[in-house]
Amino acid sequence: MAIQPLSVISPAIGQTRIGTGVQPTPYEAQQSFGNFLKAAINEVDKKQIESDKMTQKLVLGGDVELHDVMIAAQKASVALNATMEVRNKVVEAYQEIIRMPV
Image 1 (cartoon, rainbow, N blue to C red):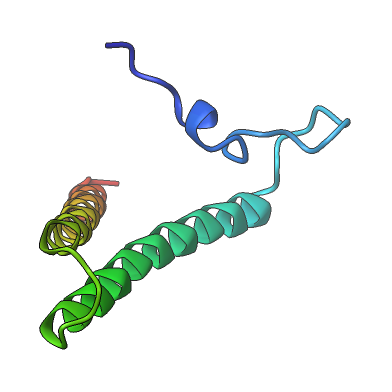
Image 2 (cartoon, rainbow, N blue to C red; image 1 turned 180 degrees about the horizontal axis):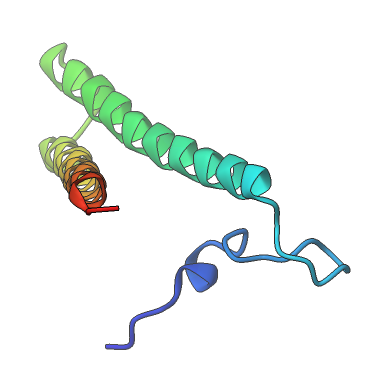
């Protein structure tokens, strides 16, 4: 299985300014990265909310299948666990950088 670069997954990453061939400034890169993180966290939040709504419907006797509720709950769980693992790796990398001698 080939590993794709981030620019394939999210075209905004690694883009130059349109038509100029100039790399984005550090501020622009920071804004772009921040927007990427916000979108990813919002997506995890949507999955959690969807799972909660489906569970609520099931408990109240709504028109929802048990297997759909379980699938939504697993998707939310996997998304949250993946987010936490990425967070842990980022914190670990930051701590390694802080420990480097100058």
